[in-house]
Length: 510
Ligand code: FRU
Image (cartoon, rainbow, N blue to C red; front, side, top):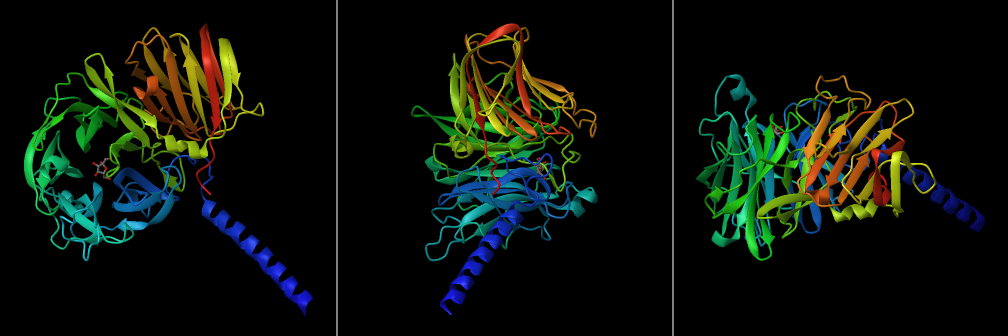
């Protein structure tokens, strides 16, 4: 009897082991297809675009996103939902907000209503409140000009379920075809909520005591910055600049980005609770590459400003050759101010939490590159995804070539004559799904230090270049027919690399 019992226990243990490995397989299912990002958030299936409602609450980063649950092309928008404790590993959750008779759910933001200004909290509960655009497709088709209105929804269970406010919409459209993407923040000096909202070619600011009643405060943007297309997804953020408050307005723009299509510009300035002002004369971009759009920052993260973008471009987002999902997010990035002369710029760097998936670096020092040099990992071979950090002693031309055995390649480098960084995906693999995809994209170097530092985050189908400590950033996606498995550094004139770090990145999917 005793023998039979232990046999049963062993059988049960084996069964448990089998089941848990089966579950791990199921969880991972679909997360290792060709081109599937391994260190970036993407949905298991179907279409995503903008990050929405990013809010940090009780140790959890919430990420909502524009989601079409029934198709891998854009359609009636819902808010998908995922959460993370470390900004790196993501747990996918059920759809958070569904369309209703007012419209589908376009982009927006979410806040922690600590003081229960909205009154949605009962018995001391802290409500999370989401503020978003509702897009009335029927109104749009009928040719009306008031089909985008702002609504709110609240959650009393830390973001799990959402209840729409009965008196939606809270801001009615005054007659503008593009009137959307509310980003809300708490303005402590005047104890009120402030919303930035995109309206055709400018941003409008609204304020509210309770997230339900809003008044218009001012406009910003006509004749300022880039206007090659409509202004979308604004974000007004306050930075602490050694005790002085500095305000930055992020404005997404489509089309009209420096390398075509969608892009993210920013203005450094001041805000007095009513009006945003900026003396900035030039146009500045958070990312010069083609594939970082609709980015905004998490709310409720204190002095830390964490930005996330959609890693695609409206020029071809609906056509990229991936299945069964379409599109992904960038690596979350920490934004900081950088003073250069009398000017202030914004730098972006991958969040330090990325260390959770970094293997120990393989470091090589004082590398003289003449012609071509292969980068190798620990075992002599190279594994993707990975990070590369490179410190060069002087400012010289160089190219990093990511390649596979069928001759497809992606070029990343610096052109000293033009003083430009570049990413060239003309021979990167699948390129003909859209006519402008295959291109060489460039970005200016904005500082003239005698040394150069670049960091790359390279996933299966994307690269993010952070040059000069994140002053110039470029994001680019690519679709090789066979995975890239080699990286070479080339420099016709020769370059001395003081330090080269190769860091293998572990997949974020279980
Ligand atoms: C930006 C955008 C937003 C809009 C959403 C619709 O990519 O066009 O302006 O709210 O996408 O999905």
